[in-house]
Length: 166
Image (cartoon, rainbow, N blue to C red; front, side, top):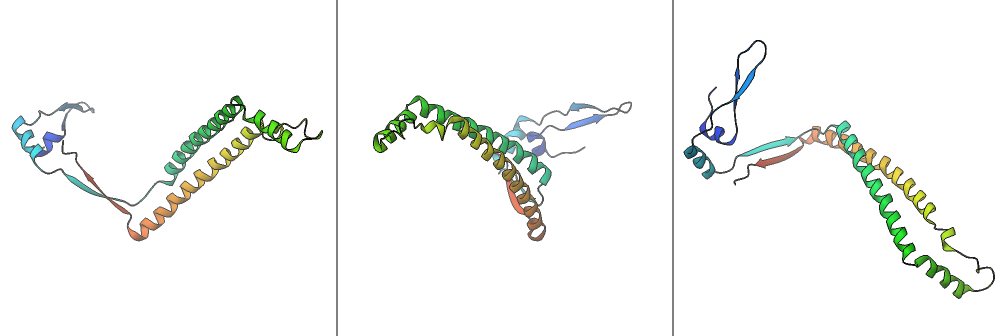
């Protein structure tokens, strides 16, 4: 196995030793420090890659997990905001404002919590979060299929990767 000195400075090569059906790997010796210093002075290597296909199954699994995390964050944040509003006395303030502005016997027993209580709001939030999980997963998977069709016609996206010079 022959390698250029530039390549051995940036990666370790392994030589396979013959055995009874098994291969033992031993690292090859590193390049001399002078060769490593010379390799650092050259321009970084670049690789041009083309993204021509995205696996829809992988996209669906990833989108599903991310949308589940988004749903959990949404429900927890709505619950926290609702508890902070209750602790700040917003609901009592709304109740007293409505009773003072409208007045009368009909409004004396009015409570805003009966209409927008924590259980109703969290139930609605969970429903919206479940619908979002389905929609985000389906949209991401459909986008992967559409990208694959467009990449088959147009060739995909070209990406250039470069080595870090340091």
